[in-house]
Structure formats: C-alpha cells, structure tokens
Amino acid sequence: MRIIRIPESGDRMSPFFSIIIPVFNEMDQINQVIRHLSVLSAGYDFEIIVVDGNPAGNTIQAIDEIGWRMPVKKLLSPKGRGIQMNTGAAHADGKILLFLHADTILNPNAFQDIESVIRSEKEVVGGAFDLGIDSPKLIFRIIERVSSFRSRITRIPYGDQAIFMKSGYFHKIGCFSTFPIMEDVDLMLRVGRSGGKIRIIPEKVRTSSRRWEKEGVLFCTFRNWLLIMLFFCGVSPAWLAKYYT
Image 1 (tube, rainbow, N blue to C red):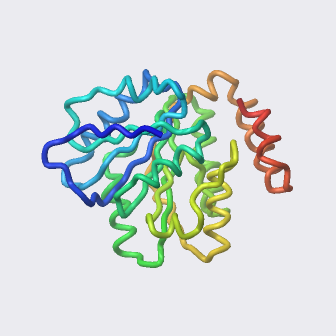
Image 2 (cartoon, one colour):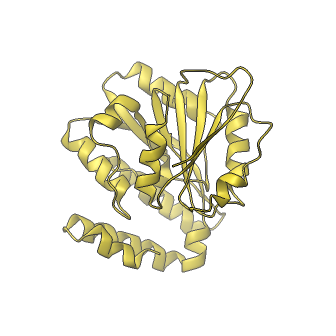
C-alpha cells in the first residue's frame, strides 16, 4: 500500500477531525469536495484522507497538490467502501472520524455542530446528518423527509448522511465490516448492540442525485428498501451486491 503526504505549512500533528473520503473513479468530483472542505476549515484542526479503490490511483492523481489549507493524505486500498474507509481510519490522527462520500457536501456549520454534540453530550459516540439531495424535484423532498424519519426511528443513518464517530470507539467496535454493501448499516447495528448513543444532527448534507437520476427515482428507492429488508432477513451482502451496481 502506498501513502503520499502533501506537505502543508503549519501542519498539525493531532487534528480534531479526520475526514475520510473513499473514492473510485471520482476524478471530476474530488477537487470540488476538497475545495469546499478547505472553505469550511477556518478555525478547525483537521486532515483529509482520500482513499482510492482503483489500483491505478486515478482519483488521487487528479487531486490538486497546492492551495489547500489543511493536510491531505492520499492512499491506495483494495476496492470496497468499508475496506477503503478502514484504511483511511488506520492512518487517521484525528479524535473524530468523519466518513464523507465524494459526491456529498457538508453544510457550513457541520464542524461546529459535530463539535457541539461531542463536547456537550459525553455519552454520544457518533452520529450523522439529515439527508439532503441536490435536486429541485419534489420527489426528492419526499425522500429526504422519509430518510429523516427513518434515521430517527431506527437510529441507523446511511453513509450518504456523513457518518461521524469518535476514533477510539470506532476501533473498539471493530471498524466497518468488509461487506461489499451494507457496511454502514452493519456498523450502526453494532453501535446499538454495544449501547452506544448516536445523534442525528437536524441539518442537511447535500448529496448528488446522480444515482437516482441514472437509475430512475422510484426504481432506485424501492430497490434500496428491498435490499435493506433482505439484509435484515439475513441475506448475504455479497449476494445483495449483485443487485446494487
């Protein structure tokens, strides 16, 4: 495995946040999300860790090498979101791990919100944000509302809601599974079984609608619900992954 460090003036040894971004062929997205995080970085110690699941490393090679306000680590990893995020976590120096999809943008107060929750509610081990979808279509407002309700009832946010967790606790419960899908659901189930408390922050992240638009909103939504139900019924994630491409 190869690690490349982009040096940064004023580099900090112990950042408060480590933002871990698993990528696979995200050359068109990666600089946009890093640029946005750079804007949000004022007043906070954090590092960005980009973990590329493509052995060619085409996404990490596309990262601009100058102009960022924070350290950026670039890693190669075997493909698989859970594997890639675990690789990032193994190289993270931060107290709080934030797992961010490359097509998801945080709200302007995201770091303040996380810090407020972590510092004021000692029993909270992690959490996520409400889902926002980057499209004006009414159907996505309905999906957002359903997602918000589901997350609060089940206490199981999904990966596109920007899951965050205390680093020590994340490693204590065994990190993400290496399932090809459902690694986020499995993690939250283990948090619940261990007695950990999570907080769903009532501010939206903004995630791309590209998957819904490509596959069809209704098909994509109902397919996802069906896969989740089958997972809870004990169907293997490896089998389920055949229907989530």
